[in-house]
Length: 407
Image (cartoon, rainbow, N blue to C red; front, top):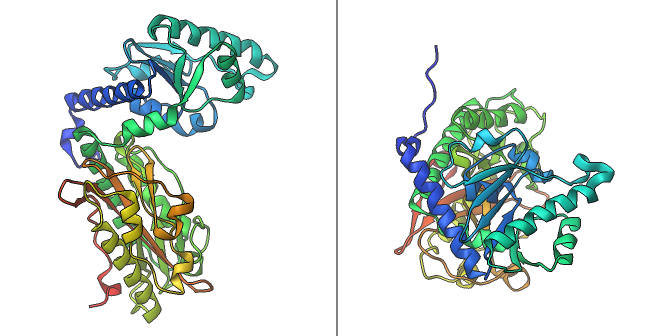
C-alpha cells in the first residue's frame, strides 16, 4: 500500500490556519470595496469567489458558465450563490454567512427564458442592495454578461469595475497566503523534478507533461492553466502547447508550469533541460546562459519602494538576435493565479505599461524566454519571488542545470 501524499508545509493543514486565511482575505476585500466607495460587491470570477469565500466548485467550468457568484456586503453578510445542490461545499468556510441556489440566466441554462430568469436574478440583487448597502447604488462587479449589466443599469445601479477592486485586495499577500503559496511551489517543484527524471528518448511531450498534472492532483492541487511543455524544434517559437511529438536524445525540453496547486494558489515556474546524457551543444548553452542571466539580474531589481517604471527601465535586455522574441513583461504578480500587476520592459512600457510601487508582501514571477528567430530551439526560465523591505526572497529554489551554465 502506498502512503498518502502530505502537504509539505504541515501548518497549512491546521484548522485555524484555514480560518485565518479566509478571514484575512475577506477583511482586505471589504477594505477595498470601501476604498472604491462601494458598500457591496458581486463576484462571478471563480478566482474572486475563492478569494472571498475559500469555496471551490467546478472552477474551470464556471470560468465560461456564469453558474455561481457571491454577494459581499461591507457591513453585512457574505452570501454565496452556488450551483444548486452544492451548499455542503461551504461547510468548511468560516466567512460564508448564507448559501443560496444561484439564479442562472445564461443561454445554455435558460434558453429563450433567459429574460424571465434575468428578472428574478436582478430582483434578488436589488433586494440585497436595499437591505445591506445603505441605499447605495454603487456596486462592484467583476464579470457580468451584457443582459445583466443592462438590467442593473436600468434599475439605477452604477457598476464599478470589480476586477480592479479584487486585484487591489489580492495585491499584498497575508502571512497565511504566503504559507499556502509555499505549499503550491513545493508541489510544483516536486512535479518538475519527476518530469525531469522521466524525460527519456521515446516518450511524448504529453506523457511528460502529464506527470506534473498527476503530482499536483495527488497533493491536493487543482488544475493547470496551460500546456506549455515543448521539445526540440517545438521550443522555438514559444507559446506552443505540448503535443504527441516523441522526444529525442539531445532535445531541449522547455516548460512553463502555470500550476494552480494546493489551497488554490499558483506556482508559475519555468525550467528547461536536455534529454539524455549527451553533451549540450554550444547553442543550447548560449540560450540557457542568457535566460539564466536575465532572470537573475532582473530578480535583483525587486525590493519594496521601487517603481514599476524604474524596474522596466533598469531591466536587463537580451542581445540581438534573441531580443526579437524577448518577453514583453519582466514580471507578473501571482497568487491564486497570474495576477496584477504586469511589469513591462522598457521597450513596451510607454505603449502597454503602467506605473506603481512595489510593497513588501507582493509575490512576482520573473521570466525569460530566449530563442532566435529561425532558430532550432528555445529556453524558458522563470522564478517566483516574495518582495521584502530589503530585497526579495526566492520562493522557487529548484536547481538550474549545471551542465548548461557556463563556469
